Length: 257
Image (cartoon, rainbow, N blue to C red; front, side):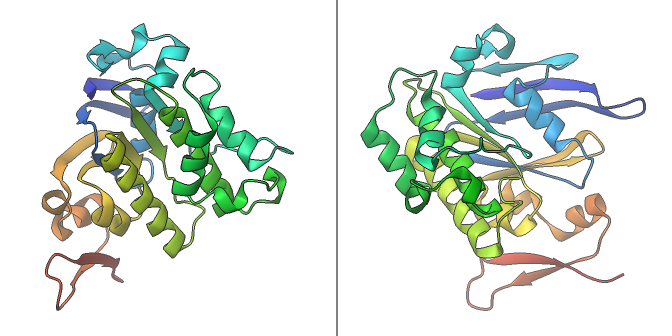
């Protein structure tokens, strides 16, 4: 389990994150929701070890995150940051294969499987300079997935910061569906910063609603994502749509004031 226990840190002279407590279990997708500037990315950085909390503790597999070496951490968790970029003049296959550079269990068959599952196989021989923003995001996700696939650790986690920012509506939904399938098939825990409410509603098992550096709600997606709660956090009126034939299908759209 990935555990954040009362973590927090300063985000500026007058802004602070935390204390926040969250857990991510193997095989589940936990989405971090909240308005811009709420602290979602900062919280993801604490969970990944990219930043250190000034209060509280982060534990992975029962061990303090700060006790892991860089190589050990790479075997347990992969991170796809919001502003991640691909190196120029490399083939997609080379970039994805580089995800396993610290692992001893990489192999060609596993690489091909990850390329197929991530939708990056048709791009494998392309140079990174020729990719669109959406294609590059697919490749970055494939590299992160290959990093975890090459690990022999029982507990593995994928941490994503707005992974669909460069994708159109269909590609975004397909990518999140792939991430959710990966989590359930391989027992990988996923923690993802998400801006699209409907993507979280469709694909996350649980959501944590972050507002002004605090976690104001966390729990099963259907329970937390209610119009009145989201309206209070986002400061916008929302219409909640329900499909006439599918009672479990819901969606939110913003309304004019």
